[in-house]
Length: 396
Image (cartoon, rainbow, N blue to C red):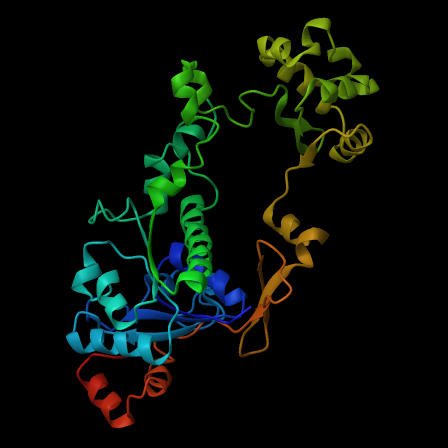
């Protein structure tokens, strides 16, 4: 696979996550951050979030999404900074330009597709925004989009408040859409020689996942089918979290055959009735079934129940905390890593898919502006000009 060059004006999580996936392929990723404005800490605000694990500008929340990248600082409000951007795109033969700022700023900063395409006609341009370019002022914050896209309405206990998901799903979904659509654009460019503009709306990407709920509106669904239901499944009964003698276990009965195998276990024979032999019948008795099943599971340790369910081929899982997830053999041997200058090895999330050419050990994330001079020299800007640009606040 040919190594590509990605230039990304990125911050927060959605676009850094997308470009991380390119870095994991061994592609060159150069992140652009703004020069100091005098009204706060410079660059990506996420640099300063979390524990001080490396430097003041490389804190814990910033590390994992930004390993394996380079960092430059340009003032794109200045025409000279915009000219430098175009020069870098041409001189470094940049394949993809990415950004995740509000669309209203595209033309102001000289990063709009038409401007950059004029510098390099086959450039692939990818932007993430809250609602796409039709809504140029809307900021894209994952929790706000979780509320807007119905995720919070669907998450949590039926008797409780709307609830955020435990991970920033919409940020990550948007990043994956950039990754997938850039790959498609590169494939098409290999045939046509043409670049492409890609606009990822976080709202549209998020609502594309409402495949089990949104279409029900045209089926005159019961309101309970499209709201919170805790840990239950809306259709398959019983599927829920059940107490054990020493914790909790998740059990998912996805067919009448699985229900039969469950109730053939001696511990659970008492909960079987003719009415419950079909999922339709179990749906009518869902509350009673949850009560009866919990009355059995809470009498036994999780390990005993796990052994029973494994023998009967019943889908199940203990409720893992994050340390337990990392220690799972299927996860632990696939963790990605970075090594800090002091020799510490930091273990991070695995890649989504194993690829033979991928890099699972990446350099630590760059300091703010650490590669500005090197990248500009590579683009043919002389040292004296760089010093002048730095003095004028065009670079940092």
